Each structure stands twice: as C-alpha cells, then as structure tokens.
Image 1 (cartoon, one colour):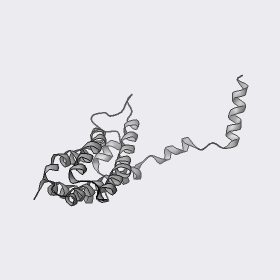
Image 2 (cartoon, helix red, strand yellow):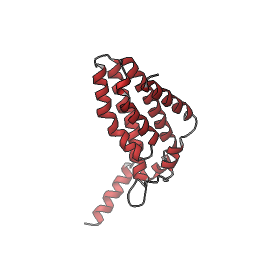
Image 3 (cartoon, one colour):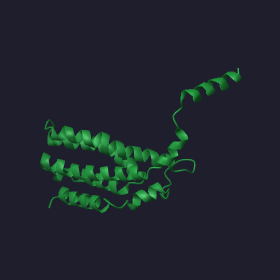
Image 4 (cartoon, one colour):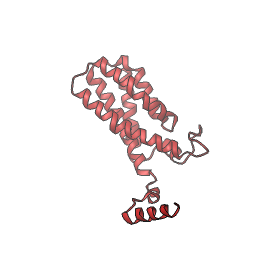
Length: 172
C-alpha cells in the first residue's frame, strides 16, 4: 500500500472517530490548556478565535474552492501538488501551533508522501479525506463557540445613535 493510501486510511479513521465526540485537542485549546500558552497578555481567547477563524477559512474558503478547480480537470497532477504545497501549509503550520496538532501532522505527512501519488484521482481522493477532516474540525469549533458573548455586541438602533450624538454634543 502506498504512503498516501496509508495516510488516507488514518485521516478517514480519525474523521470517523471525532464525528460524534469532540477531539481532546480541541477541548485543550477551547479551555485554554495549551502547554505552549498560545495567546498574549496571559489570555488565550485571541489565539483561540484566530485559530478557529483559520480552520473555517481553510476548510470552507480555501480547500473547497481548490477542490472545485482540481476536479474541473484544468490542472496537471504536478500543478495540484504545487498548489497544495504552496497554499495549505500557510494555514496548517499556524493551526498546529494553536491547538490542531493532528491536523498539522496530517498535512506534513501529505506533503511528505506527494511523490507516492501517481494520478490526479489518487491526489483528489486523499485531498477529499483531508477536507472532510478539516470540515469536521470546523463543525466542532462552531458547536462550542462562545456565542453567548454576542450579547455584548448588540446592533445599535436610531434611538441609541441619537442619544450618543446628544451625549457627545454635551462635551463641546
């Protein structure tokens, strides 16, 4: 079995394992327990928020569009490999640092086994497995996002704006 096929099996197994159970590494990140203390000024929310925005962008706004281009048939296998090596590590190296070590490992292995991929179909097969895994991580992130914080950021209505104007004018 080729290296890429072994990696694909492991990614598929991990995706299945986390389908109904939040991955421990996401709990560690979400609860601020990263040993590397990612974040600044003693807080981890900024790092958590940034990493979770990146996993969303990787999954939904980068990997999906790239898949559509690859499936469209206009790229050679070598071009697809180059696209992967150029675009995906930009996300996954930061994500590895910020609480997604399994994702980072899978993506490093993907790059390492590119030489064992001999057809576009095989590349796309492995890529789809990685995309499904990223998509599942994104779903967990959305599930546990601190949506309750939104009450602090309510939309302002006209009455609020008028009161703010009145108060500002009092200071002139």
